[in-house]
Length: 158
Image (cartoon, rainbow, N blue to C red; front, side, top):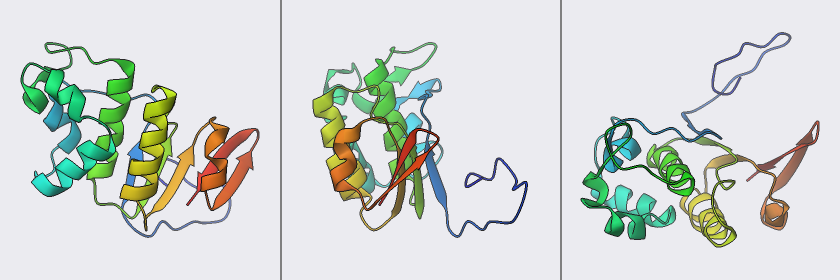
């Protein structure tokens, strides 16, 4: 409903502000890594560099043949599951939104990278924004403002 993909069956709701969404299944389209992150938005070098750092993508870029200008997707370089997840999260972070819906963005990365993403991307870069994080990783419970359990699914609110 927050994404405006469903209507209320009963009652009403209002979403005030711009919403960014990182889906549980990361998606990559044919194009450069940078194009996958910008997703049609104007390039702002300062914001882009902050997002790349928060999403731990600098090392990956240094390993790609053409850095963030490397083609990915059907005719380009194949990304690992963790790389796709971090590009997907970077795409959401690059949007200057009011509300961030993050559907288990830490599931495809190792524990060390997950901790970095949680601390630097979700808690630091998005500080001051409304963040809804859906995850099965209970180690982050101590760092959130609210916990909502819905039919066995844990949702964190910041």
